[in-house]
Image 1 (cartoon, one colour):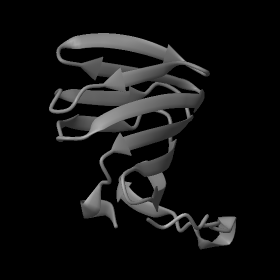
Image 2: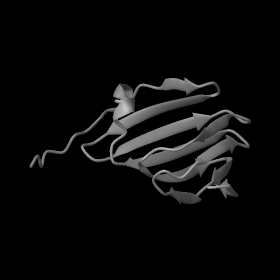
Image 3: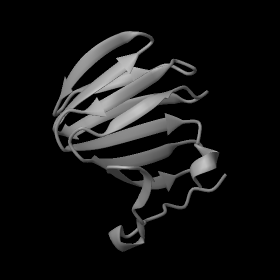
Image 4: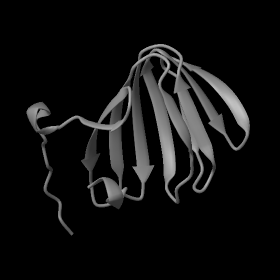
Length: 110
C-alpha cells in the first residue's frame, strides 16, 4: 500500500472547459475524484447519470439541482448526496463555485 502523500500545487490544476459557461479542474486519487467547478449565471448542466456516488458542495452562489425528478435550491454552504445511477441535472442560478466528489474515481476525466 502506498502511504505517500501527494501535493498538487495550484498552478498544476488546469482548468478545462467541458461545458459552455463552465470551467472545471480535477484531482484524482486511487478511489476518488474531486472536481472544482466555476459556473457562469444561467449555465445548465444537462440531465445525466453515472455509476459513481457523488457529493456536491456549493461554495458560493445559488444552484438548482434536480435529482430523480425532484428539484432542490442550493445556497452557499449547502451540500447534496447523489446516489449512483440517479438521473440528475442542474442550473447555475447565479455565478457559482461548486465542489463535486465522486467515488470511485472518474476514469473518463483523467
